[in-house]
Amino acid sequence: MTDTSQTKRALITGITGQDGSYLAELLLDKGYEVHGIIRRASTFNTGRIEHLYQDPHDSEARLFLHYGDLTDSSRLVTLIDKVAPHEIYHLAAQSHVRVSFDEPEFTGNTTGVGTTRLLEAIRMAGIETRFYQASSSEMFGATPPPQSETTPFYPRSPYGAAKVYGYWMARNYREAHGMFAVNGILFNHESPRRGETFVTRKLARAAARISMGLEKYVYMGNLDAVRDWGYAPEYVEGMWRMLQHHEPDDYVLATGTAYTVRDFADHCFARVDLDYRDHIRFDEGYLRPTEVDALIGDASKAENALGWKAETLPPQLADIMVTAELQDLQK
Ligand code: NAP
Ligand code: G4F
Image (cartoon, rainbow, N blue to C red; front, side):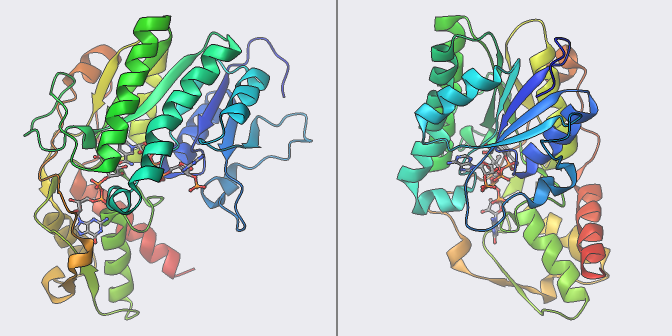
């Protein structure tokens, strides 16, 4: 660890995920010492942060990885005590909505109670820190758009219900214990680092592979769902701004635009001069028992208080993602 009293230390749970990797980049660029919690796996799970890796024996190293898991309270306490971070970004979760219907208990344990374990670990360690909770637009569920910080929650999945619980635990630690705990209520945000089974990455990947003759069809579920898709690197900047604000509060981050899954498919396939209708087939296995029909966010509070505004809109996002897939295939 660097021993300069000026250096800010941040701890990121979920550093190996899409957002964790962009956030680690951002914080390292800002001069932070960054600590990340990773899960032990039998295969490497650090692909998204490989380019950031620094040998911990190097005296200049500012990125440190620690084994840990959201289900292991004692480990969270000892880690927080040891690292004593100024800022904690809690991004780790079982984050796949469809999977949460198959694994509701596991999702509740990690995505929901995992947040409580971390908040309680902070309280037990007795450190002064700022806490970011990765809340989600999925919490709005069936409540019609536009959705803002004052919109009532109506979750439609075990994942959404677990996130509502995490949201209220962060609020409660703020109100009950005076903790600087913030909820970022983020609408869907995507990138070439998005997990392959989320709809934007699946479509971008399929369009690229089909255009190269590697596949003919992609099997999809509901194409009529409306989402508000932004670009992940911009959203992690918003997370950081929330923790720099003079007081803890909750904020929506979104683009305010509405596109269907079908629109996104159209943009991805048009990028490679194909018609999506020739290549998409239906598989009911990708339907959810309860669907969230439309998420469109109102991020005006974040714009006014934090000066944050989404720049990249879905057509450009589709272009970025398909281009990245094509480049990967040409390597
Ligand atoms: P992601 O790519 O799925 O990353 C999830 C991270 O959590 C991974 O690093 C994963 O580790 C880790 N993790 C999962 N279970 C864990 C456990 N039991 N213990 C420790 N770590 C665990 O998710 P993301 O897209 O970056 O999203 C970040 C956070 O924001 C999540 O909480 C998500 O629910 C929330 N969110 C995302 C969006 C979005 O559109 N992306 C919108 C709103 C909210 P492995 O790499 O080992 O699997
Ligand atoms: O890409 P998705 O799986 O994302 P979803 O369910 O909106 O959840 C993501 O965003 C949330 C924020 O609102 C996050 F909290 C959460 O962690 C995650 O990052 O699905 C988007 C839409 C859904 O309506 C789904 O039914 O796409 C539809 N869809 C249609 N065919 C499909 C597919 N989704 C997936 N994953 N795979 C399909 O084949």
